[in-house]
Image 1 (tube, rainbow, N blue to C red):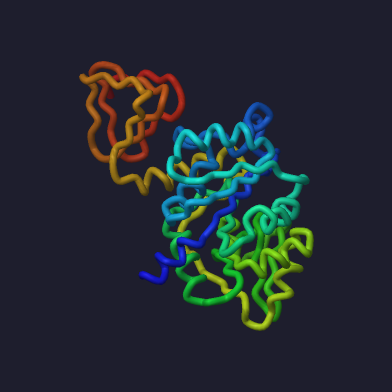
Image 2: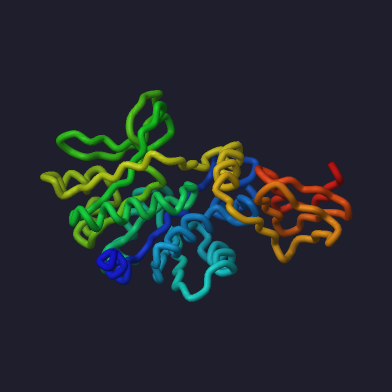
Length: 288
């Protein structure tokens, strides 16, 4: 454990938050995808929080509007250096190419800004990477339908490609990839094409970590509901925003609940635990 803790002192993190979110309409024409609220916090908060809880103190967020994203993320994290960088180009290759330039001074954890994962997935990937001693670690999850996901193909050569048809296989989970300096340099040399960079590291220098737990790739508005379900299932205590309006005569019972900013719970209301959440809106709850 001590070796893992010492290793974290040289870690950096990069979150890719530059997606346009065209499938998230009608939300994204009015709000950048990383800033869409999930249980009262922006999507970008969740991968950032996971990296912070790993012990990282330097994190870079690549997005289309670094000022807006920086202002929002800055509300939640203290004592952490978070650098917000504007993305050059429109695709994921453009963002991946930038990483070596902005963060390539040592071991770097890369993740997507719109995929919700529990902390345990990040821990598993990091522990696997440290134990392997290899140049790059890819986190993957078996799925029965890979359509719309990035597939990890593990044959003689490891490759990552977007899947457009229905097929089973292994998905690149949350875009989590842990890389040493030499891999980030190769990624930059190949203009961010991750499969071409991986081909240079054949011969056993690529580690694959298997995650069998839950994750939610927020690609469509209804994916927010799936993420809420998983996050609420993991909730172990009530969380009541200081910006909510909860009557002292209201009753909260039966397990953890989440009451977000702007929510209102009236006199005599009974709110029962479980999946009950009042997220980001002005709501009056009556006795039931």
